[in-house]
View 1 (tube, rainbow, N blue to C red):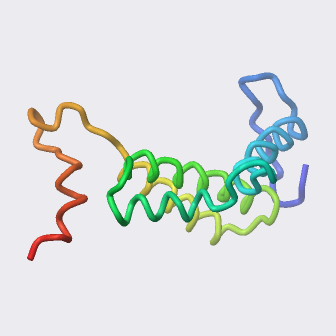
View 2 (cartoon, rainbow, N blue to C red):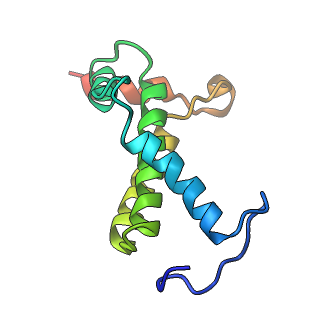
Length: 122
């Protein structure tokens, strides 16, 4: 256990601290540092879809949110950088909320489609 964390509350999966650390960082590294076979411009492609509305911008926002979740885990566990963790966790939460699809928008007044077209009003 690192000097930054004195208490380990346990794992539902039955892992000890080191196994949990390796599990989280393995997932985070896979997301943050994609393999050479994968599209390294994935984030740029997602941002372009969000900006141009060609494709599914909601799914792209959720995908970028997953990236920031992994980055926040890395900030906290590897670097013990609380400020970077808070910033990336905030970005992850914001992107996850913005990427949420609400299927009952007509009944509850919440329509995510209006969000995307609001800046095109002239």
